[in-house]
Length: 524
Image 1 (cartoon, rainbow, N blue to C red):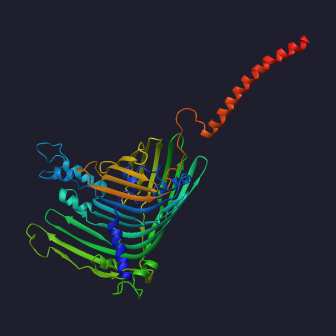
Image 2 (image 1 turned 60 degrees about the horizontal axis):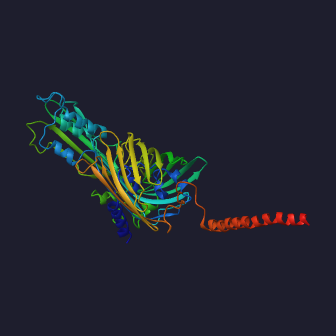
């Protein structure tokens, strides 16, 4: 039964949601191209700017009922790029006799260089229903996250593009990492007179890990004028049960005449240590408490098609390319390799313990400004990562978003992001708010701005529960001119004015009568 429950959990995590570019997303942020640092609302501020919760105290609670995010993305493949290569010849500078300035091959190769190779990354994000909740200036969130990153080495592309014309030795080492975690976060924000500060403390519960150990893996190909040879060794390491802590920091100003600014550092501290004893390892190891045996509830190596291994082992793969030339291309002995095999992976300082390793949770720095009024919200962000890994990108990116609020229950959204020649994004979306329910939809073209040029997409849906009075609890802004008096006050005042005028009219005869009486008295 435990095995069935665990596999169902893994399948749900894999197929439920996929996101790219930001570890926590919602349909509104997708539609506004992540220009979200100073406009995020409720628990959606977690992962963008926790300080925004400080200005939610006059608003009712938010409770997530359902969330769905699907995203696919790469750094090259699109209909436009494939059509441009179909039936055409790529030239380096000076190779085209009809056009010496044609450098289409160089431009394409530089595009791969900027990305570090042919890269594919995906993040699967499953916000657990009911558990994600915010009220006032606090929020509690829980998310299952699957992250994967694969980069085909630049050496393969260089060999395909230029042969051995540029350098004789090419690096052929792959970069591969896949892991799943459960992210539990508590967010708290403190408002001051002119600004607010916020912090999110996260516990990162590692579920499983699979990746190539960069310190123990190497692969090269050496080319010469007469032959090609090379070799490679990869060490695939696995982990079950990990733990770590993360920290998000945020700052945002109070709204001045509709303007607001803020900055945030997401995952300022975020490291997961794997192969540590804990609840997750006890759960998947089965009754005997040891990985690599038949009673394992879940073994990540066996799940991916490798031999089942324990936490004290890793998978090794080695190959060798013999001297290859035109004469020996048909020889069956050109490429030789050993089958995948289990090898020891113990702590060198303590052989009785498995070798522990760490995974860095990529950090993102964000800064943004926004302006809002009754009719619309416009926002702009710049953000950058510190490494090209998973959802992060080591380069500045800019985005702008617009939300049209003319229709009170149906906000319309659009956004655009730009980050150099390899990154563009166009987002579209809308919301529908009725009573206590908030439904939002967002769609984005990744690395392109239309169907033929996009290199991926994001589709996001969300259903949220709030108060029966709706999310916005602020009083309606008055119309131009002085505020009208309440009906009761106006009603009370009218009789007073009438009575005042009647008093004046009643006093006039009295004033006229007084002289008469005086005259009569004087006459007497």
